[in-house]
Length: 364
Image (cartoon, rainbow, N blue to C red; front, side, top):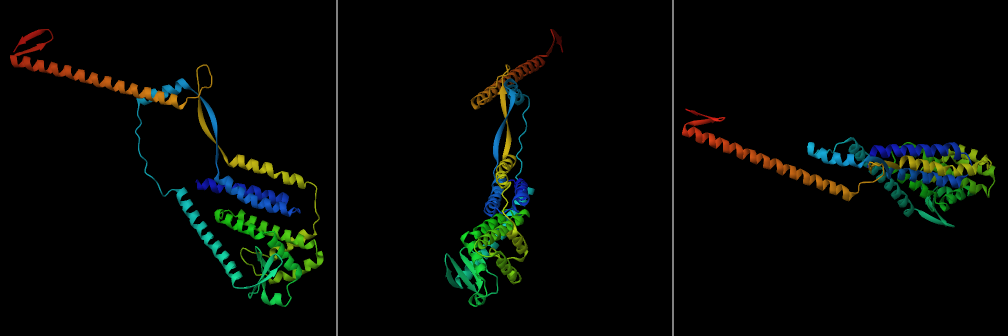
């Protein structure tokens, strides 16, 4: 895996998808659509960053030139093959190691928080409440949820200080499985922790959860009474990790959204616009072109050199090189034999007192 490419691709993907949500979807009442758009965008960013779909790009090459280069090039010059040493301390390897270490730490943190919530459930009193269960805890806290469990302060619940609208609000979080969304975000954060846009996605998903719960409560309760209830709870917030809760920083946005009216103009167009957006990102980031040579004959007909043809050309080159080597060896041996014979004759003549020079004989 190329770590640098993964970081760049995921950053581009998250930036464009969150930018589209922030500009066109955030301020209109399509809460269910926004919920699935944000979650799918996170998963899409990871998949597009990890997957590379290779496509071939055919380049025409004359087959005669290709064969000539294969044959003549190997006969004229042989390149010396050197074995490159394996380098472990490369930039990519260092980045991958650092990435894995931080991801492992975040994974441990995630598992520890899950364990704390489960331990809190097992050590606390439970009260059945329709399809959910209320967990009575001693710690002072605002109501929050984790799957089908609603965590409330024991004293406030037993004394009737927790408003009915608040319990209904938390029930909506349970019944719509908003905790599953938070878990998905936390798991994605373990993978894409280096991208600050992921934190914006998390805040957007949490805020959208509150919009969904508020919308459900307002279908059966008065708007002004519910808003006053939220304002009374603002200053009693103690945030719990991995849980849905009432948050001061989100309350103002929630109150503004409650007063907005449903807008129908252009909503369908905005929803449909995400399809070409996803396709464009996939084509741009996931597809990679691979150059593939295509042979053509002299009459410009596209004929691809098959593997069998390549093997035959290689075999012919091997036979040709072997024959040339044998001829060179034989010529060298013949030349060496002639030289040795001439040298022997000269030595013999010297021993007899004569030296042959050209066609004349001199007496020593």
